[in-house]
Image 1 (cartoon, helix red, strand yellow):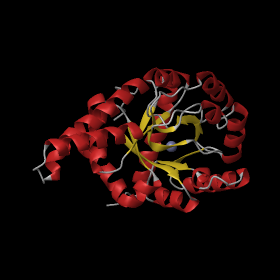
Image 2: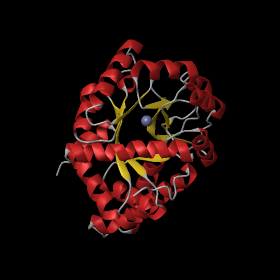
Image 3: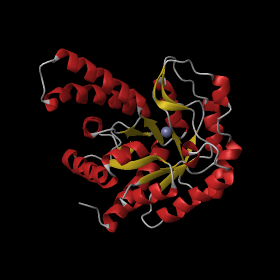
Image 4: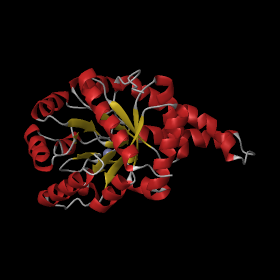
Length: 303
Ligand SMILES: [Zn+2]
């Protein structure tokens, strides 16, 4: 059952208050991708146990696979069942139309990412489409996130090493961040400081000095995409510097899949899939708890 416009606006007021708390209390909130209901259950359990606010998010592929209204309903149901502070984010919305549909469905957070979908998009086009979503979002108050350039990597496991010379070419700059935020009016700037989509065979390195400079150049919230495979001490520092949201996907996917493979191998004669899932809930939940701890959001729930 869909939410009324008043319920959507109330949720979004709470989401804005969450971002205010991240800034004043110096913690970041995790945005955890959900491929399916099992992952959502794992995130809900972690949020409940840690008394932490959480975002769950769906990429375009995940949104299309499950359906925006189904995702909204599932999040509403688990929020209520577990008594948790949970919000919903569209991750890398590829077009203005996709973002508008998620706003209509009552998502609290919208990430519009024209450049990820089309690497040849011009700056003017990215700015004008981002502004269109910012304008449309005013109806519900949804918080809009974006950036001018796409991030490297993909949300998968990569065997190759990280080429930092290439990655550095995609870094945000304080001046660029300010110009983009001023031009678009976004609520959240997605910074690129060494964060990369995906999990690599070597740990990632974040440029915290650059993050500090970006923080000083803009007033809006800052997010970090591509949080998987990053040494946790970076997150502790990033939250203190003033990052509000950190996205985690590949670390959860990796544990989901490897645990599933093990459970299937250990139970060759079990065909009731539901009986194979508890081990997966536990393992994915452990990943979420580890991140919550590093982000400093343990005990920060407001309900
Ligand atoms: Zn991302």
